[in-house]
Length: 132
Image (cartoon, rainbow, N blue to C red):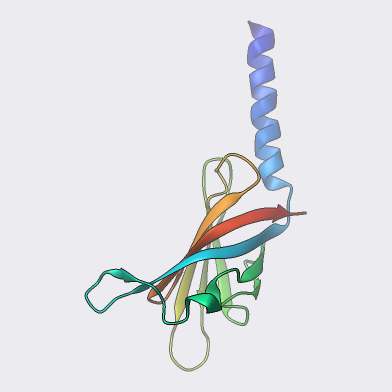
């Protein structure tokens, strides 16, 4: 019994360590929706513009390379774990204020992590993988 408990504790630490031993994410947008005038989800005017768009996220700083907010101010609110999503907020710093929220389900089982990027009145969904 003690051996089983010890093995479970070691596996818990290994699982947590695995989730912490990477520097970022490579993400790909697969679906996009836009807020319609009646409040319903609609296809964006140019759905092909976002589909298959790839971007990289630095897990420490939150900096986005490629994607929709690469030159904006970023703040990581949660680095993610086996129980929490990675969460970052992006804000434009010139002209009109624009805000984006990125949430990557780090706790999802396996190497592919679903994400949600709320970009003004658009929402993008897709998957991310770890970068070492």
